[in-house]
Structure formats: C-alpha cells, structure tokens
Image 1: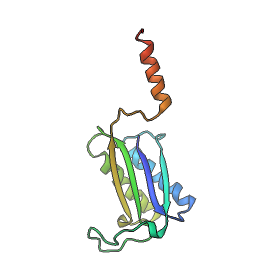
Image 2: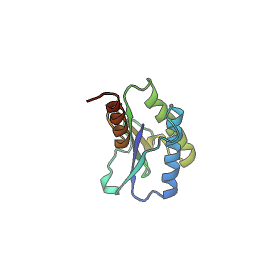
Image 3: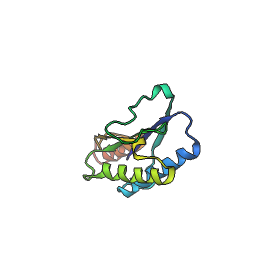
Image 4: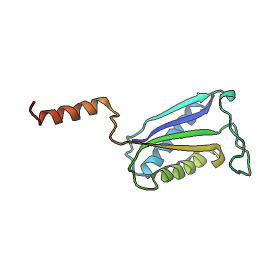
Length: 136
C-alpha cells in the first residue's frame, strides 16, 4: 500500500491536485499496485517554508515555483525496481498532464515493514480469526 504525500507551495488548484493524484495512481498501478489502493495527501507550504536550491545536483535549468516533493511510503520486500517504476512513470505523467519539468519533482521513497498493522479493523479481524482457531 503506497502512502503518498505531495508537498507543494500554497495555492495549487483542486484540479491540479486531482490530476497529480490520478497520475500518481496510474504510476502505482503500472508498478503492480491495485487501482483502489489510493492514499494521497497534499501538504501546502508557504514560499518561505519551502527552500530549495534552484539547480542541485547539476541541472542546466532552474527549478520553478512549481517544485514539489513526492514522498512515497511502500512496504519492503517489493520487487527490485518498484520505486524506480513508480517514479519514472509518475514523472512522465506529471510532465504530460501538468507540464512539470523533471527538475521540479523530487521523489523520496521510504520502505516499512509489511507486517506492521495499518488498518485497525483488518488487524482486529485477523486476530479474531486466529483466536477462534485456538481454544484458550
């Protein structure tokens, strides 16, 4: 289950948020995730709260005020290349649909243990099923 946080400068339109989310979801599906597996949030920050170097690591063109950070939390143990597949497809779709340049996107991937409970109701059902099979 990818959990995606888009950190953007304040003022991004609802339509652009929707386009970003849909493109990200399509990138997730292309990497093997289920289409219903959408957990995206947007954090908007002010101009003074989002400080970035215009050209690091060595871009020929400056980043613009449309620069965003896309943090993606995925379960460890996914096939090699999953994060790269998501990032590559998302960057392509962001460029195609929102005219975002590659230097205006920074992907950060974090991996977490896939066995950690994420949905309390699902964890409760699993525990209840396990307890039902084991008399006390």
